[in-house]
Length: 101
Image 1 (tube, rainbow, N blue to C red):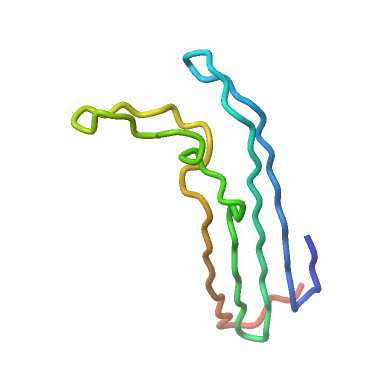
Image 2: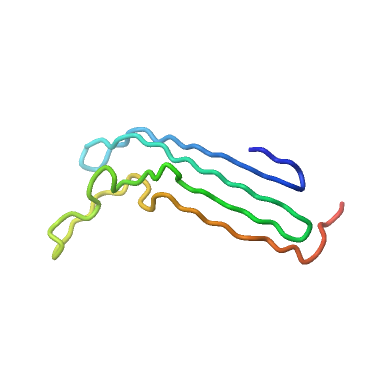
């Protein structure tokens, strides 16, 4: 995490998940998930961007989640992210000044 008070906040995160055992006794593969967040503060307005799972790690890359037949599907046990890479952002509008202690 880096912070320049009143101007910038930038954070990086990384998570490692090792092999897991599924209910049938099989083992999953290990994987990494990484993210980055940035916030730019101004007098009355702050802007932020968030990049989640920018390695695009998702279980569907390692095997089918929905298994045939489609008329009566079976579903794999979920053990890794399913949504992949996500970007979101927004703004914070300060209507009143900061509280002073």
